[in-house]
Amino acid sequence: MNFKLHKKLQHLACLFVLGGSLAGSLAYANEQDAEAIERGKAATVACVACHQADGSGMNNEGAEPWPRLSGISAGYLVKQLEDFRSGQRVNPSMEPFAKMLTEEQIPDVAAYYASLEVVPADSTPEVEQALLERGKQLALRGDWNNYIVACVSCHGPGNQGVGDDFPNIAGQHPAYIATQLQAWKAGKRGNDPLGLMKDIANRMSDEDIQAVAAWLGQQPAVSVDNH
Image (tube, rainbow, N blue to C red; front, side):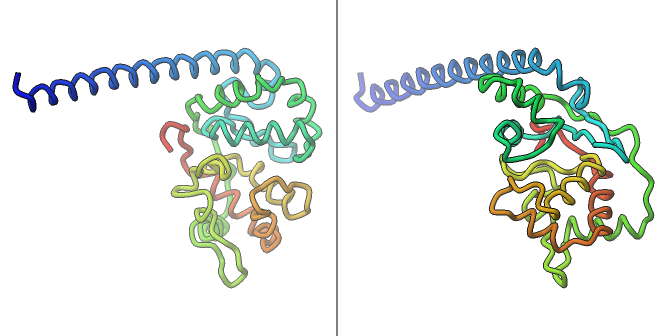
């Protein structure tokens, strides 16, 4: 057999074996992910009362809002649950539920909610157009006169999240966004990277917070696979 032809056949054989190995590894990983999602679904019995079975949460204006969890990366959800358990993030409602989960269940629950398709909100609170325009400015361009960085600078294009540190905030409930910004501003929350959110929230007026929360709440949210 021609030596060059022999080498080519060897190379093709190696590629075939490697391709089969990679396909097998991918299938195994997908199977493991599916199993984690099923375990996570079983562990969310106590979660659905607030966050709903579809992970859509509830705006609950005037009361404690329950955030939408679908469309949020699993890594971000894992960190928040771990922070609730450790007390690094304080919330009297979430702490006991987070502590009910085992260390093995936390990533499973996060994987389950991250796997859900985002369900658009039935309705959003009506707000004045001027307030929405201010919110749009803060979200997309910021306010450099007041040293307020635009949301997209960290949360990415469309504010649909970047990695596991900056969550998808497009389409999140306005009351929840406003509550968290106020918590950072008051020093009641501090589990964000490098204290970035506290610095930004400190420079925002109460009206700015309501504006950006209202505008973000009206933006289309996307599922994790579509980020």
